[in-house]
Amino acid sequence: MTAAAGDVAAGAAPGGVDGAEPARTIFFGSGSFAVPILEALVSSPATDVVGVISAPDRPVGRGAIVTPVPVTARARELGIPLIQPDRIRHPAAFEAVAALRPVIGVLADYGQIVPAAILDLPPRGILNVHPSLLPRHRGATPIPAAILAGDRETGVTLIRMDEGLDTGPIVAAKRWALDGTETAPELEALAAVAGAALVTATLGPWLRGEVAPNTQPTEGVTLTRPLRREDGRLDPARSAAELERQVRALQPWPGTFVETDTGRIKVLRAVVAPAAGGASPEAGGTPGALEPAVAPASSGSFGEGPGLRLHTADGDLVLVEVQPAGGRRMTGEELLLGRPSLPGSRVLGAS
Image (cartoon, rainbow, N blue to C red):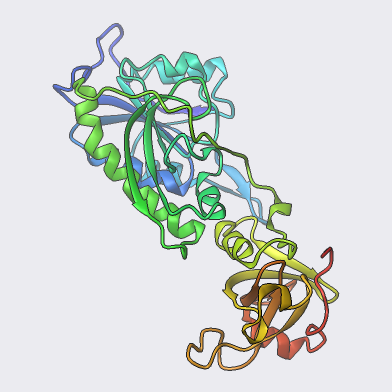
């Protein structure tokens, strides 16, 4: 574990407990979602960020270049002391965090379960910025889960952390409507900005004791899990609408793909199209079959020439932008030009 923390007078009472002065604040975060929230804390008159707890720098890529996570990089730019434990449960991590004498903590996109001993350190607790409307989509992947489920709205929720997985009482929340076109990176960026604004608006009143948290409802609880590479496989036994949501939800990782006789094809962008000739979905073709797709003359949405259409159990999915294994990004039309054998074939593994 690496640590760098400012000197603290032994036995001194931490400032900011009652909100009369900036509260000594620690921040737990790693990924890009957390960066705007850290920046909001640094800018807030209610908080004095005395330390950031983040993931260790690790080798990345084929060159194994040691690289910091986004929060670590930003904390270094801001000159904030860093603690980077391999395991937050290690006694040395507890000692390093305790030495900062925090009044309050904020967590966003950290990546480790924070033990009760650390949760109990700040008198005003540790608040978690979670990018969903809790108790819906607790767990590791709430943003992809909201897109996959076709949710009509989403939001960010600020909770006081307890030992459970996103089960703590709700301090504040912000919600907004979804239009059904958002990709996971777009929604994450939007949620990060909303989360930063929510933290800014809430911390002062919370520190002054003006906000009472509410127990999460027992109805509507859902739990998400970490994504796996195989989650990206597009199964034509499902509906075209579901597969289109999958393409948007699983960007940038694990991404989505189909397997064909000519190799794996990554699907980078797709749209739902009616079955060929306006027929019913059942008449549109055998699920898993690949055929040319031509956009309706009035729209031009699929390009100037034929694209690639994947028949599914309910409707057809037009593969607008793809990337063949070992190749570059290209339109479905360009892929057809290079692989004329694809029309009439079926994706591998289709039932």
